Image (cartoon, rainbow, N blue to C red; front, side, top):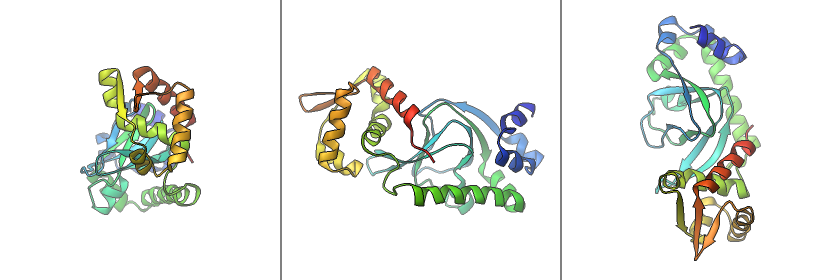
Length: 233
């Protein structure tokens, strides 16, 4: 309990919120430290928990029918993941949520969270106000197509979609179909070529015989750049 109090002490919203949390629900909550690139919620899968970000950063990805992801929103703490699915009763996620750096997460059982929020107006008001602020920034301050642009957008796409294979094999060779890349990234061919050229000059990728190649070392540099240059509200 003392560890939990210390964890939320410096955040006004979380301190107020958990002051109203019933003891029996608080006892069932989990505190978890998760690494970068940890998937909390996966699109089209059932969501059974609410994830509350205490420190770190979360990226929200929309996925296409081939499971390729495009980051369109980054969230700093405090923020809630899974809240729409739990409170709406929809259950199934419409986006993938993943950490972009080591993060501390409070995990609350979905039914516990729903019961708590629906029975306590002050808690409901805090969560709703935070959610509205998130939506305001998303709709007004951020391009609805993508939060990341140009080079950052391309790097985020490569990291999200090919990281596992690169880590498994030490590198990846991707057929460089510019029309396909352009379509997935909603980026015109000219801009795509400019951004590929930039990554090539910075030695973050190589291009060999019409294949885009990324080594494990290059991936590390890409992810380090994204970690220190992530767009956020």
